[in-house]
Amino acid sequence: MALEEPDKEDEQVASQNQEVSEVEKNQESAVKQVDVTKKEFSGVKTTLFRNPADGTQWPIPVSMSPMPTVDRILTYVDRTGFCGILCIGMSGTGKSTLAKYLVHQIHQKRNFIVHWYERDDIQNLDKEIKHLQVGASHIMVFDDASFSLEQLKREQINKIAQNLTYVRHDVRGQVIIIMNIHYSKAISRFFRNVPFAFLTSISQEEVHSFVDVWPHGRWKFKDFAWYYQQMMFNSKWVFEVDRWTNKTITYRTDEPFRLGLAMEGNYIHFFVYLKDGCTACDPDYNIKKLANSKDLVDHFIKSYGVNRARSMLKLYAFARHGKKAIDSNRYAIWKSISEYDKNNRINWDNVIGELNKTLKVRRRVYLKKDHMTQQAEALEQLPAGDPEVERIKTEQEIEFAQQLEEQLADLQENQDKVIPMGYDPETSNPATMPYGEEDIEGQLDQDGIVPEGESSDTI
Image 1: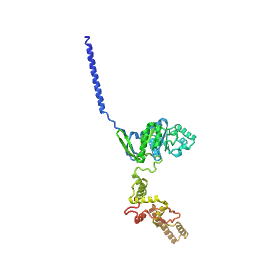
Image 2: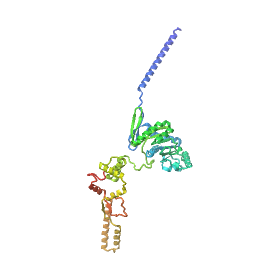
Image 3: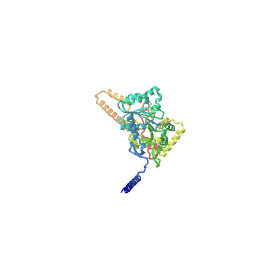
Image 4: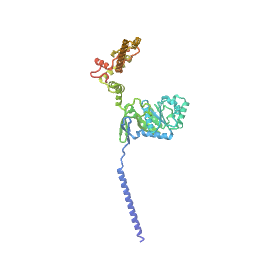
């Protein structure tokens, strides 16, 4: 009996090993099933960036969205009470646009009082801080602050720097200061020491300067230099979304946004921005703002009439933006005038004067003030109570009233007529007025300048 017990133990061990092997097989099959159903890598994640002007949405990589940057600015200022921001770029590359966009996004999330300053106002930064409302949160934007502090003495600069150091204690609220400069070293080192810096442009010289400070971001700076070259010289840029899958997206400059480079501490990334704001954060928000091209055309047609609006808008589009908005005849005249202007010294004031002489002039009869006064005084001297005198006075008053009404109607009808340049009502004959545009058009048609069936101010 004692010899049979080991055999039973061997059988139990064998059965346990068999159970373990079955469990391992089941685990391996489960792992294989998971591997089979695992999703493949789908590439860089993208999101839709909404244009607030018209509601259109544009696909961009998630890392290029400016919204997380705004959240990080607010998180930083919550921790420290003060945040400095630099917007660096050459003139016309969108520094002010970017500053307005950031301010608008920040004040939409928090209740900040926005203050805008220009040029040399930064020299009085310490005084401006003293004028801030205590207990409130403020955003101070210094537009075009390049080299302004260089004009101050060292003691004054140190005083401004000291006020910045204690600004959160003096104001007893959160303070964000944004400085727009044209060059990365256009302001002293103390003011460049900020947690957030944004580039709207970059030159080859600055690429090397930034690489020295952020060596890990050398390829970002070089790529941004390439994108900036395309954006400003080709009016579009092709952004590489995913190099592994060779996926790219083509964007047109300002339709609706531009590309920038953000340096948030040690994190360097691309971002997009556009024009956006409101009356609370943008002092220029109500100045000539239009939603689209139709609003522009409707505005000028309503203000100046169809003919004038059409002719001037087309002329502006041709002269300022090079659009083919005029017919071949006028374009030939334009080229001929350009050649004469290029090869001759022409006094254009005299040219305009000669053109004004070609305008037809018609004479209008106006009541002379002195003559009316003399007649009124003569009537007053006549004896009162005489029926004949009263009749004459009544007839004269009626005649004066009729003449005044005719003059008023004539002035209202011709209030938008062309007045020749150089016309001086003090020295010229006040009874002389030029023809209206309809008369000028008729004259041009007779001279053969305007093609048949075409209005003279239709381009």
